[in-house]
Image 1 (cartoon, rainbow, N blue to C red):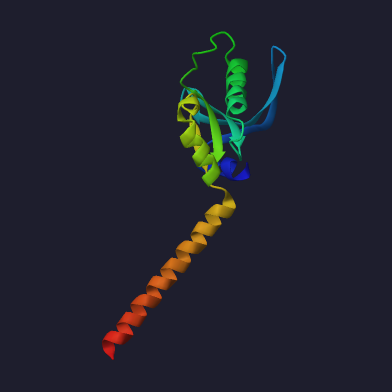
Image 2 (cartoon, rainbow, N blue to C red):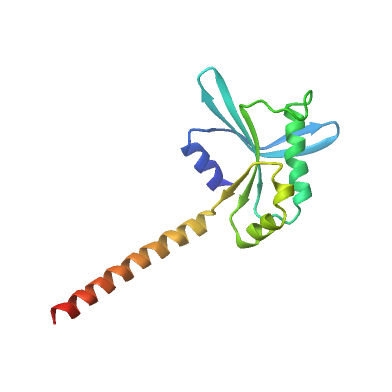
Length: 147
């Protein structure tokens, strides 16, 4: 959750709350992350449901839908253009497989893929190793060319 919040704050969004409780006609729930970005003449809202594992797609979609109904009970289907209700999913191989197998269902909500900090750090380390290996290979080739 922290990595997502940090990323969104870097994009100019302000954290309004985490685990924000709501009650929509007896359906209790929590909004994982509520963000706002101030834009001239309006606010842009992002209501995010975070999932580390996409093991129950139906429940994830219901959570997003209930949050939308809580914020916009009169319309239910129409959402103002300055509000986004999304599903934030950790970029894991298993989640990507589930997403591919259920694209039609999951197309009902915007999905943001989140690279977990540990994965991001691992990718940076691997990139540095690859650069070092490339430099070493160039140095070796240069030495061989000289001799």
